[in-house]
Image (cartoon, rainbow, N blue to C red; front, side, top):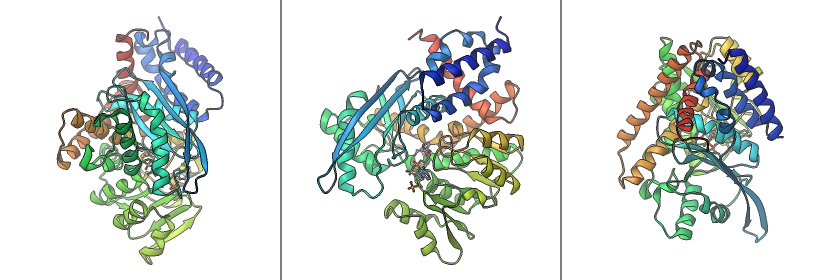
Length: 452
Ligand code: NDP
């Protein structure tokens, strides 16, 4: 009979062993710790999950690919970047997860993202495993031709590891519709196959799903609304702070406006803008999606209601709801304290692991509804899986149908997390609910499929 004490001792030992075997990967350690910290109740209640080796297998990627990406800039100079694809877990379906192009990318970052993706994908209820990839390439300031040459070189190695039944990448930081286009073109050229389901986030006219660009941001707002509803409150009329100004942030702002909330901020790595009248989403799209400009230009063009705060953090602006939508560890304990002081009611993570563990605990102690990324931002990968389904059926659903499916999936994820947390003695704790519910689904599949 396994007691809670035995389980805790074993999980502590596993944590130490994972740090020893994966040195200098703090983000990966952080993601694993967060999950292991919440699993003790389910391991004690369900002895089959405490089987030796199950959690150890879950924490070790099935495959990790690292490769050279040489490319030439517009002046003919040769650059060498590093490419990654971590295929973490395929118990539920083909590996699925985005590609990130950002200078901060290293193996530990990709592993943290791939690990999170396993549970997130499980929570969607769809048949997708977990993976992630990317490169330390910095797309900022590069011409279209340079981006194309980089994507072609990246795919020239990646193509041999992916496929519609094997591993299906999508976008993430630094990888949007333009990059997916170049990557898909090179895959098609090398393989001589029209294999639409090999990548998601494609353009609307050539296999992309309606609502995929919007899905992550829309989904995280729906999750925030569901958490507020659970507390008898409505999102309508609430103020919100949003960080980032990329894909997730833009469609978070759009959905907040559509539901009658008032998004006050957005940001990039140079600082943030605060707009007393609420962010003008069309101006934001023009500057960020069309012109690929900086966020300071928003304040210059918007008029008196908006100002740019160089180097500042959006969390200092008072609001009812916070939606961190830029990058990992962008909201720390001091930021959380400021938000709580200013009366924040709900936090939904549009980005992956944007909130530090200390900040999460502070929110939970203060009674703030906290929706972790693996639940709150799962709408993106869910619509990616719907894109795969449309590709397999050689069909295209209407935007209305996809949006209905997205709303249904986000509502189901909220209910699953909420009910699982209650069942395991942690009512209102969406972190525990998400981790345990995702874990149960993957663990059941792994146990059924034997020791592989
Ligand atoms: P984009 O590249 O479209 O936008 C990223 C935004 O975050 C930009 O405004 C960027 O500013 C800012 N940012 C990135 N890195 C940093 C940094 N180190 N410091 C400060 N600001 C930073 O990416 P996405 O919107 O697609 O992704 C945002 C987050 O959402 C990521 O955590 C991603 O993993 C997560 N996510 C994305 C999904 C998707 O479907 N795209 C799905 C689920 C999660 P700047 O331009 O100045 O760098």
